[in-house]
Length: 174
Image (cartoon, rainbow, N blue to C red):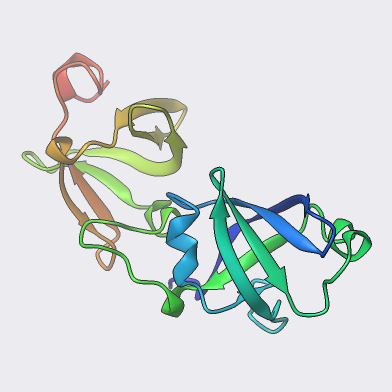
């Protein structure tokens, strides 16, 4: 079951003297988080942060929260993680929340051979990389569109189109 409230980012410092907070976004960009109606201090959505305003700044998101109107109050929130309600945001076709990808079975799109479980998504400058684990074996798979046949969240599977050598022996079981 998909979690409704997801990690949006971490408060890393205050900004200015009026209590504005600098959020390190755990999303594709700070701009993506502009569509969020409110942030929450917990993953259950029971503690709203009462978002008054937000704006991108140097790759981060500056946020103003109700009741946070001084440097001291802002600094007290440093290190806190803010959560978003997945219902507040829209994803483009072919975009997914990373949390939803973790745990998918990775299989060959042509043969159906199972390679393991998608355990982590690594962000690299060129493209994301999937860390796929099967037993004590680990594989790194480039998350580029022409190598991904299908992502089926409901079915719990991602169908890959690997090039020879990624999964030992040209895709044969190692």
